Length: 284
Image 1 (cartoon, rainbow, N blue to C red):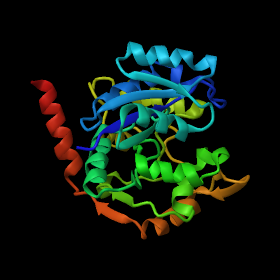
Image 2 (image 1 turned 180 degrees about the vertical axis):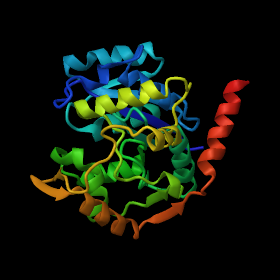
Image 3 (image 1 turned 90 degrees about the vertical axis):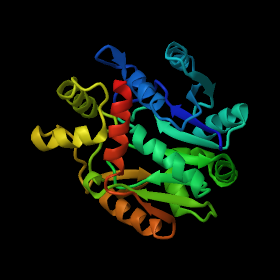
């Protein structure tokens, strides 16, 4: 089987919510909650917390060790450098980019993405139309090297944009989730004080659950509306060369780009079946 390495990308230099990955949620730091989630993915061979050589980020290497995963300190700005270096150390076939502020990155989707990424021999795989912050991105190492050779390294924060809006010959695989889980204007990432407040709200209201799954959050919102969950279609977001786009329009443009990719629509009951298996296994 192809070797797949999970790369949690994190630093401590966040501006809108300073040192967000180190903030306490219950008895753990935000980044530790994410590490726990990534550990629950069955199809990841090793997990690295990929941070930078900045002295302020050394604490993340300690957290990685304390939580039983690997740590790597590399380029301050070029995330691809970090992922490719880890891939070289491990002789990996695939790497997963998991953003350090995506505390609700869902292991069920992670495992399904890896499975189908390998089956279809893709260079790049993502799941679309889910809330922001729920899924990761998978790259073949060979595909990531292609990107590295042609991408302006000052623009690596716009990696996803580059993949779909520039000329490249990557084999792209797009997964569509069960329709009941489609909420592209919801956000579960943590980037602002409001995002952190939303996260605390979710954790408080679902504290009785050993593991919080995406459907638990969506069901909670139906009975007890979650604050700051929805993103306005009309907000403007930054893009390369100091340009901006309206978020809703960008999502529509992406949908058009997806039509040129290999598409897999996941079965309506796939998530519920997988979740049930995991829960039952945990009870044994």
